[in-house]
Amino acid sequence: MDSNQATTYCYKRLPGNRPVCLDIYLPRPTPPNDGTPSGLRFPVVIYFHGGGLTVGNRKSWFPSWLYNRVLSLGYVFISADYQLIPPASGHDIVTDIQDLFSFITDTEFKVTDHTFKVHRDKIAVAGSSSGGLCAYLAAMHCSPQPAAVLSMYGMGGNFLSPHYLSPKDKVFFRGRELLDPSEFLEYLYPFKEKDTLPISDSPLDYYPQTYRIPGYPANPRMLLARLYLQLGVFLDYYTGMHDPGLSETLRAIINKKGYSSKDLEEAIPERHRYLFPQFKVDSRWPPSMLLHGTADSAVPVDESRLLQDLLEKAGVSAELVEFQDKEHSFDYEPDAEDTWGEKFNIVKDFLFKQLGSAT
Image (cartoon, rainbow, N blue to C red; front, top):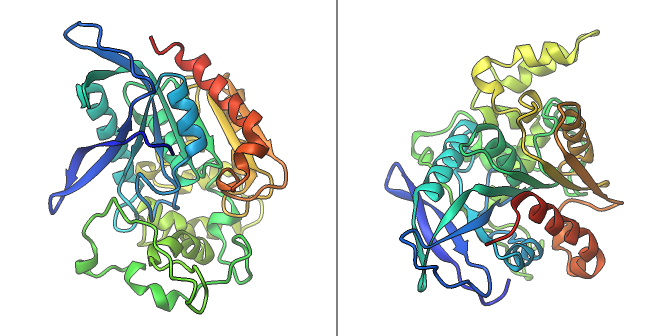
């Protein structure tokens, strides 16, 4: 990211007066106000950070390659926080995203000497990993509906797979060790009352190089998504369904012979089904571009392949750009721009095609 400074807005407050914030960045150079009462109207790309829905904030894993291309198009770039699980669930996150859309479309922003509004018909959503899931949820549940969806190795294309439902007893996640659940009791259901205050901002933190495992995560939330996947209970925390656990219910069906995907869908209570993108794809879904590494062990590439297939069958324009033999978060590698710059430019072209000119 360059020297362009973010302006921070609080778009809602949680119990305990805890703010949920967004950072907004103007394009360079910014056109002068046109003298009309409403000032400028900008296309905008809203970005949701990754972190398995359990950790991070609007500055975590900032996608500089995307940010630079968005601003070069003359668009506004917004990076937004959302509530983290636990204690939140996907239901709370959907509400946050809807509240975010209401805020950005109703607000006249003031950044330095510029006053402007967001162009309601020119909103794209983007996200990495769990942030990709947030982008899907925005496409499914927000008004105005986004004009485009951009997902970088987004989760949620297929939640009904062993990756989410099966307990693991061998290393499965980027070659990293299995975790000891006893070290994370405060984040495991049932929760203690004192641990249930909502949170939307949990910064990344690492132990120093002198630690027994140099650079190991010092914020335990950085390991939660991996722990929930290891235990095969991620969907319990995502839906908030613990008694009985949704994952256990679905595993019981999978362990039977002759089950169908319809059996799994019907086993999910109706109140939770709207959290599953694979059940909500129809012709109204916005044009989409999906980026995914073929060697991804955190979010398998088959999730994006399935979602692309569902979108195309619904008549939606959906392009999947695969990155051969690349793991999760490949676009944060030091040489990513040099290696993948041409493919990243395909994203820029996609956004321009869907949102059009900034003026």
